[in-house]
Image (cartoon, rainbow, N blue to C red; front, side, top):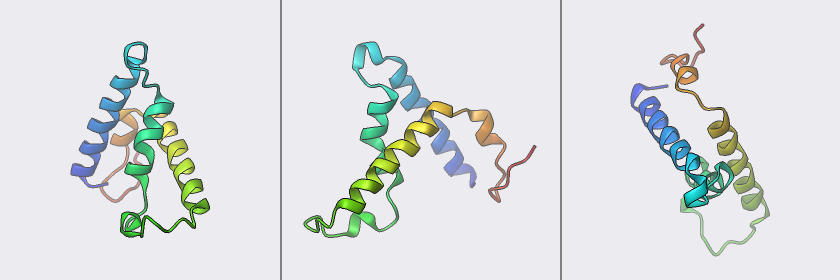
Length: 94
């Protein structure tokens, strides 16, 4: 993973986890954060170019639910150390 991408992900995930740590005040649990940001952060390339009036929608809804689940999992298990184990060729180093 390129260094700018890694740095951005670390910063963003740390920020989202910080928001979730204040759930008592802001009502933003990891699930709520994943629901809001999952479809935005994990949509496939070109997805936003589709006609919004096209409601063939079941697959897009299923995709959005999957994106929520994936982001929730990442945030729940995120650690900077794990990302540092991925080298610039996307290989895990031990």
